[in-house]
Length: 223
Image (cartoon, rainbow, N blue to C red; front, side, top):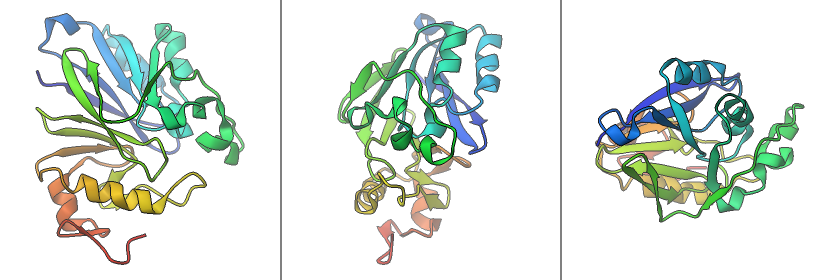
């Protein structure tokens, strides 16, 4: 079954946060899943409510503040929700120095995860199964959520249209990010990429036009 993904651009950092539903699955009627929940999530929360949906879980591509800051706002509206992130960022929701909010002067501390993933497993959103792919570099716990039947990648801040996620933060790793981008170029050209910032793209487009990638090969001077 094909998931529907509605994207909301939230906060000063213009973070793409996603609401996932399975319209053609009767078992998922009235249910949704949130992927990332950034600053100022009111527009997304109101849209979920207006559709009569009840979120079941929040999945995090990584735990930088612009992807987690609205978690408690969502819970205030919808009640307790399961929160899933990579095990290496288990403490980040409650630690401003790790989620980077401590450097902006507005500390973010939100509900910590109650489910930890490592990569290599699958998570279920409704009746659809999404592969979890560990994609470190921008942060140690970056993950991709990949729905193979629809060739869709929820990519967080790994790969952008015409760019890549920053890897100059204190917890970033440029070499790991290089390896992540190399791994992502192994997906077929037709895979749709929904990044954490900016417009959606495809693997094929980035393979041919991204200045960090030339014909599927990383530039020698990358990073």
